[in-house]
Amino acid sequence: MKEFKQLKPSVQDYRDRSYEECIFDNCDFSSSDFSDSLFEECVFKDCHLSNIQVNNTKFQNCTIRDSIVMGLDFSAMSRILLSINFIGCNLGHTQFLDLDLRKFTFEQCRFPDTMFVNCDMTGLILDGADLESTLFENCILKKCDFTTAKNYKINPSDNDVKDAKFTMPDVLSFLTPLGIVVEGI
Image 1 (tube, rainbow, N blue to C red):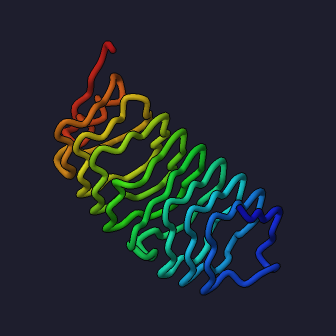
Image 2 (cartoon, one colour):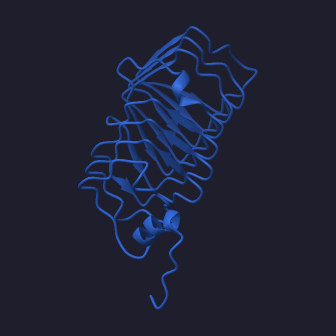
């Protein structure tokens, strides 16, 4: 695997490039343009990927670990073989719109002010996810596992939650849209 360490945004143009089996370690890609690039079997460790441009970018079987991935519009990416494993990342202020996320994994990630709209998340395990202020709208959450997730507020009227797994007390957030107050728990 080819390894890149401590790259800075101004060091290289990342548009229309191909990276296969690369490791990006402690790189700052803030506000970089990754448009029309391919990242296949790549690993990003301790990277800053905030506000990057991802128009028609292909992420195929990539892992992003312990990184800041804020302000991205994932719906701008190419959907061809889109598959990303996020581990220990901050995914704040990101948008997942009209996406099939069944080939994604999210482990120990934070999602402050993130939007999931019209996404198929069937069977996802949101292991240790902090979903504070995360919006789920018109999503397929069938068989999702939220048992180790926290701070979620999901409106079951706006999402398909059939056979999804939840735990107390967070599952009580389902009552929020109804204006019900639960006491004594």
